[in-house]
Length: 225
Image (cartoon, rainbow, N blue to C red; front, side):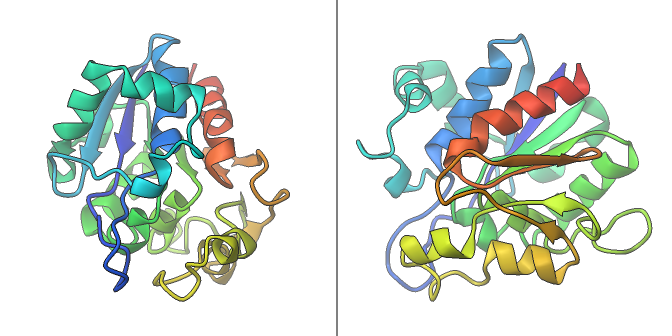
């Protein structure tokens, strides 16, 4: 089984002067969940090269078993530093695609033409597409085969407005994931803030927050195997 991971290249948190990027747990949890099952994983970003880590996700507070494993895994770190360029990637080479979150995708993947086309191609090829936390931002401009938003009429979740409020970034982010999914016609639902919550509707899998990342990977694996 071959799964493509698409991470953000964006590292600026709006006009705050602070850094952002991808959330370590949302990469590491799914990465090891799938890798330990023998899945072949390829990493790609819009710009290629080093995928930026969100410093907020690299703290003692945000630490998990998976993030600890990542910090001791030179091979995985090297892969994060040398991702493929998204435009060089071909959907036909993979069985599924997974997007880890972090705030970065709100700025780049939401509007990246290559990423949009890639998700649409995976969907046309009837392959699973999975997103966690802020990564559903990448679905903002993605259309289904009927020309309507891909999420329209589908059960979806993603980082909640109340979670965004809790991290005090409502006024910093370009849009709120929950609002965007609803505006695009998604049937949005959520669990309690910071609790594990993931949904599958057909080949579309979405998870609410970092706590949901492994669950999303497990659902993705079950869908492909």
